[in-house]
Structure formats: C-alpha cells, structure tokens
Length: 70
Image (cartoon, rainbow, N blue to C red):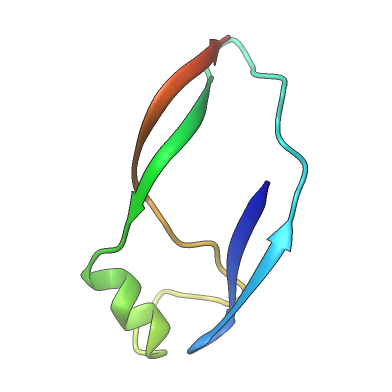
C-alpha cells in the first residue's frame, strides 16, 4: 500500500509499505476509504507545530471499513 511520509516541512515522500494482516486481541484492521487533514496537519506542513518530529505520517482523521478484528 502507499504511505505518505512528511520527511521535512513541505516535503512529502510516497512510499510502498506492506499491508498489515495480523491484529492483536485489542486491535482492528481497517480498510481506509477517506483521509482528511486538520489544522494541526497544516502547521506540521509549515514546520510550525511545536511537538512534531520528522519524519511523520499524517492523517489521523479517516474513515473506513473494519475488515478484521482481534
């Protein structure tokens, strides 16, 4: 699957990563349908978020379908 990684302010690399197939007892495996951005993501993109260390994978606002449960 593709993963967008912000390696520095304003720099995003698209990487291929393995799809997870195993889940622990207290986890789910979602199939992501949509991902959004929020105000914090914009600050991270501009290098102005005080708690961000690069590289970082953004996209904590998402929706999808649960395909597996632990």
